[in-house]
Length: 191
Image 1 (cartoon, rainbow, N blue to C red):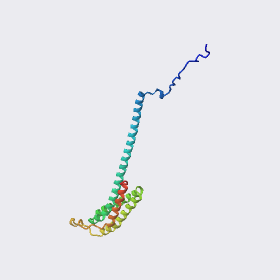
Image 2 (cartoon, one colour):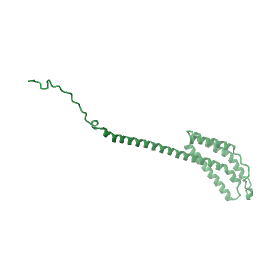
Image 3 (tube, one colour):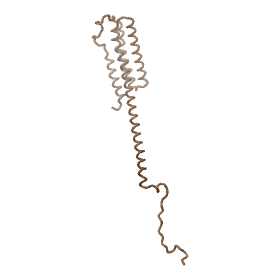
Image 4 (cartoon, rainbow, N blue to C red):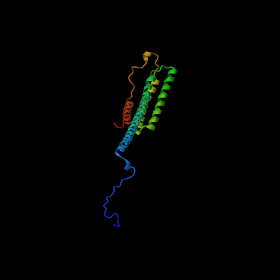
């Protein structure tokens, strides 16, 4: 007898089968997994697009708010430049004097507000250009207001100075043009 029972018997190696998670996955199992991964990717892309759209919308809203403030700041100085004409149209009554001086005071207060706003929120170039615009307006309209107070009050509608030549404002117009170019560049930095 053969002391080794396996002697002379030819054996073939047995295939080892993997066990674990990956061993149990079939092609049929991969379809829902691929669908879940695709859904996650689509969700991430949609979220990124939504965040970018939100940021763009917020930037545009802030730009429009800043543009409105800039326009109001320019209007305050233009209202100041109109003050000599208001004074020229005075009727000599104490009520008219109060209304005119109150209007001038309100305009100066608005200019002070926008000067402060520009100092806090504006760039150095914006602030400097606005300050130059205000200074030019004060240099031109201030003496014009003083001269207008010294004119005779208007007693008849026909004497209202509507056809008088415009008061000089060369320096103010030059400063305004410079300011508008600076404001436009600040509002549209990528153009």
